[in-house]
Image 1: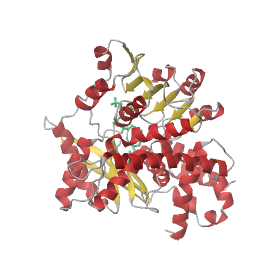
Image 2: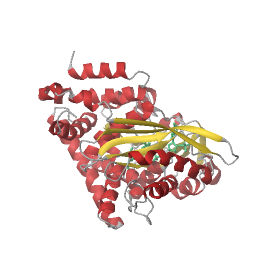
Image 3: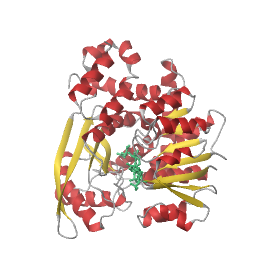
Image 4: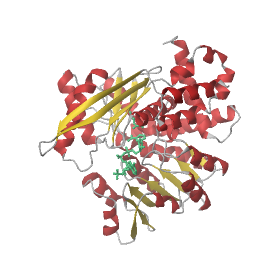
Length: 444
Ligand code: NDP
Ligand code: 2IT
């Protein structure tokens, strides 16, 4: 049996009941055969076995009290996956479906994504099954303070630097940072996505969505095409979706559909983003309200139908496995040409197969959504240098990073004989840097 197959089989045996982790590992390992064949020393050093095993997994109790005085207990996680190329770096997700499998899949992806940014950051991820939706600000604060009261001992500006992800935005980062600072008595860059008055970076809020559009724009440009006049469907209506929409619109695209976990809106006239921002960022409301406020829009209950909306460019920006094989086939049948993943692992393995078979330009998450963490690394650089760069400066660096990622994954795919296969390209380019560093460190 081939080395990668042995490692994958063993991973499934050793980590049963972790389907999302198996899926991410399968996607990655199945592309690494050409590398390990070229480098037999990797097998001798047990490199892949070490690569798929987190350096450390922390799981903890998070007790907190709601506004009625009732006690709740949630699960807290931090997976410190790989620190070969820099301190652990990756977001925290607060969502009721969070479990160890989901945090491990995200952590594994994060290692290669962070490597692709070209910046010195290792891979980690954390979170909780806490659901911030429908909670008061005081309840969210109580939860965040309790979460950080355990987490603080495991993180640090040069050790592990968490940030946001689903359910963790500016409000949560503020409460988490406040509690860290209080316990440690240190004002340091231990979290990214901080507010602009306490060490945050301009552009971090917009970075993942803007970065997604910058890399897609580059993929269009090398094909003598552009966003101008393109019809775009974006799933989700959170941080990544909103700023992907903003940048795509500014480049002349027409975004016609978005969703939240209840249902989707279709607006043939093009989404009015100020209305979405008001509903989502200001009022923390539901996307259904859009159709009540904008007469050209139609709301449909349930998310999956969004992929039946014909488009040139599909940007899944909500959550894992939101595009299955059937949805991928529908997108292809309706003429989609580009799929770029803003969310982490939004396409199932079968859906990726459909896109690749049909010659769709498919930009996988670890490349396409790397702009968020890349800008987090720029925030870290500003923190340690006690600097504050202008919007234009950070935005230019972000754009440059995304354009470079596109060309790196394109060249890696070509070099190994898989031209146009950006899943191969991203995994190979991301892995080589981590593998070289791990080999240099010996068996650790
Ligand atoms: P937000 O919490 O801001 O928004 C998430 C959006 O996705 C909401 O519209 C939410 O709907 C929807 N959503 C979440 N879970 C589900 C679900 N199970 N089913 C249907 N809809 C769902 O998160 P972000 O925008 O930050 O993150 C979106 C994706 O992008 C995630 O996959 C994340 O890992 C990834 N990502 C985020 C980065 C960042 O910097 N924030 C960086 C790189 C990747 P509702 O409000 O109804 O729950
Ligand atoms: O998935 C991701 O890359 C993020 N949620 C952002 C991580 C970060 O550290 O900025």
